[in-house]
Image (cartoon, rainbow, N blue to C red; front, side, top):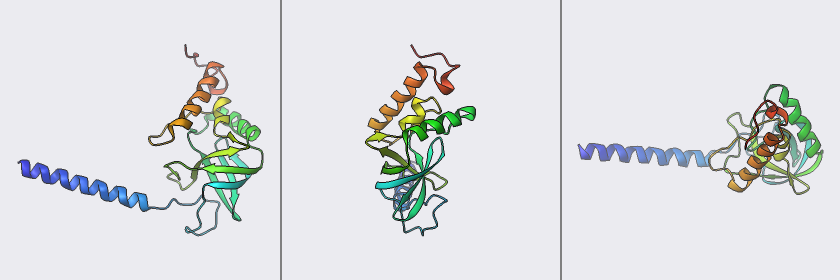
Length: 172
């Protein structure tokens, strides 16, 4: 019985390691707006912000290619507050030079890139949270330092009862 149990554990461990190895080698898919081949990837660093898609998605250009970039740590805006998130993002993220920072998750299931976006040294991901246009979306393995900033921005909007927090009791 112990031998069978030991073999099952070993097979499970080997399977788990193979899956992790396979996923680590997998390259993220590009955003749907890019016509570039899968070998032309978005990289961390300088880019140009060329548009705002919604309250948590930006359109950037890097090396003559366009990519959709979703803000890491920002959940989808909810109903009527989607416009609040979009306006906050537009105010904080003027078109022009930007800087992308990736975390462990580089792409979403739909292939959209996930990043922290910085403009003039400011973390743009905070804007829709500060305005109360959406919630913080925690994910295991994301930067704890940035997650603290995102949670703080969300808590600030909640305390001030902004956006989606208007009808919610403020934390004590």
